Every structure is written in C-alpha cells, then in structure tokens.
Image 1 (cartoon, rainbow, N blue to C red):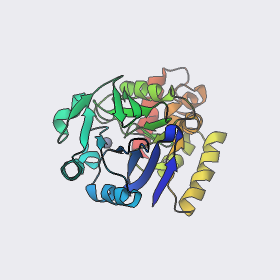
Image 2 (cartoon, rainbow, N blue to C red):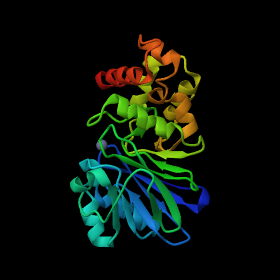
Image 3 (cartoon, rainbow, N blue to C red):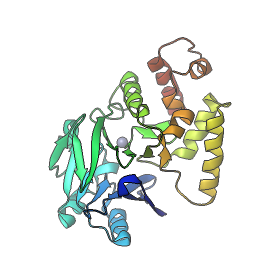
Length: 263
Ligand SMILES: [Zn+2]
C-alpha cells in the first residue's frame, strides 16, 4: 500500500505503512526538489518510497521521541545527509538532531513552509507540523482519524487543549496521522455517539476503504471535527452520553479517553 497525491501549493505527498500499523509519509516540493519524511519509524519503507518516487530526502521532521517514530532516523540521516528537525523539549531523546523547534516556529521544506504547533499530552514535547498554503497537517500521535493518542506523559486537560488547537485549523486541511487505527476508533466512537450522522458516514466510508485495501488516511479536518468524538468533548450530547452533562469539556474528554483505554 502506497498512495501518492497532490495537495495545493504543489506539495506532493506519499503515504506508506511502516512496522505493524505506523504510517510513514513523504512531503515533496517539486519547485526545489526538497523532500521531507515525517518521522522515521524504520528506514527501509522510507527508502522504498524514495526509490519509487524518485525523490531525494532532504529533511526528517520528527513529531515526538517514541521509538516507532524515530528508529529509522540515524540510518536515513547517514545515507542522505538529511537535516533532522525535532521538538525542542524532546531533542535529548531523539538521535542526530540538527535543529530544534517549538510553538510558532517555521520549518521549511524547499519552498514549502510549515508552522510548528506544540501539542503536549501523548508526550510532553510533542509537536505537529501544519503547512498552511499546502493545507497539510502532520499530527503525529496527537490526533488520529476518529481517535487521538493515549495520554501517556501529560494530563487529559493538556491533551484536550492540544486537540482544541488542531480543531481550530481550517476544515479543508488534510490530516495525516502516525497510525492506522481508524477501524477500531470507529467501533469505539459508535459506543459514545451511535446517532452522529457524520460518524455513520465515516464508518461506511472506512468500510469501503478497508474492503478496497486503501488507507483511511489522510482525512479532512472538517470531517474529523464532525465525526471524531475526541474533538467533540464540549458537545452536550457527548457529555450526556458519558453521564457528565454540564461538566467541563476537559473532564468529559478524560472520561471518553479512559473508556477508550479499556475498550
Ligand atoms: Zn507515540
């Protein structure tokens, strides 16, 4: 499975599976020839995607320090002399970092430009890369399609605030995430929002995608806002569904996340 698509501002992307259920993705700038890999779960599938596309790796943009996002960095950097950009707060845990970045910083890939969004929760230093002109978001393990990352290092309140930052992005933003978890996420989300029509529509779409052997990623932010229960913790219907009507959204989010952990 390996899909290539054009985004606005002439950015091109290429998505492929790594390890068991991680996604690798390349972002290519035809104007300059620059190509970034978002994270590096393992080197071989990234190399295969580079070979298949004929693109030359120039940058490695890291979202967070977990091994299933960083294990391929050293080998790729050695082979391609690529620049490694990583979250400032986690640089000590990530190999071969050249440049550290934080909230609001700009990262360029050739003529393409990304804004760094800090999204602590899954890890404390996690960052996401948003390319406004290309309308691309690389959400790492913060946001998944119809899901979100486990809150491992941060607090649910912190994670909810991070998700609100992503929810503020334009509806036509294409969201790429770190894992193919969509099917299980939908089965869980339906237990909270069985009557959400946007979720039902997404469930039908994902069923078709899985039957066809195509990835369920990327998705549009507008769709996620309507169908992803983890972005909807401030919706009164979601609060009521987990018996927390009238409670703060962060508390509702924490309960939904806790239920997913046990699902
Ligand atoms: Zn992770």
